[in-house]
Length: 247
Image: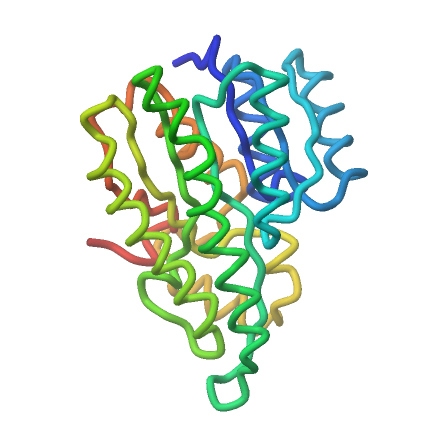
């Protein structure tokens, strides 16, 4: 499996799942545009990619800002010539029970997790249609499939990503462009590190394989969906959850 000659853009690439995806795609030969708000962390990712023999470039971008998305993707295309693969991974949480969930926290999570993916897809889809090849991969969550108390905003945004994935897949399938989602379960990241030990122990009991997932588990799934070998898979949600949700 190779991505030689392909150009990938990964959002939320400064840490966690996004960083792992960037490293994996680069290891398979893709040129990778890494985008996030933290330039210092992005520079570290680029150094890690380069140290492993790959090629990457950093792009400072806040996906909650539409104009930044437009200008950054134009800049990435100008530098690399095209974007063949986009991984919409950027995400935030603003957890609160629905009774006390503030509108600002609802809007923040929906804008960052869902609206940004629509905007990013819109910016890259024209080039994919012209070249008749593309891979769109949206990082959703098991909680977008089963819900989670205290995460009405997050679960809604991730469920919305699944709907977006299927709608876009139907629109562009005839042009050799696939659109899929990866749904991680409980993955050890900075976002989950703040959970209590009691919560983690309870979560592991719900996972048949008996362990928390790693960012590399997710990155391998993303890389597969980005490759030519997955060309007959579209509109699919690939669960990477250790059996936490089946069916």
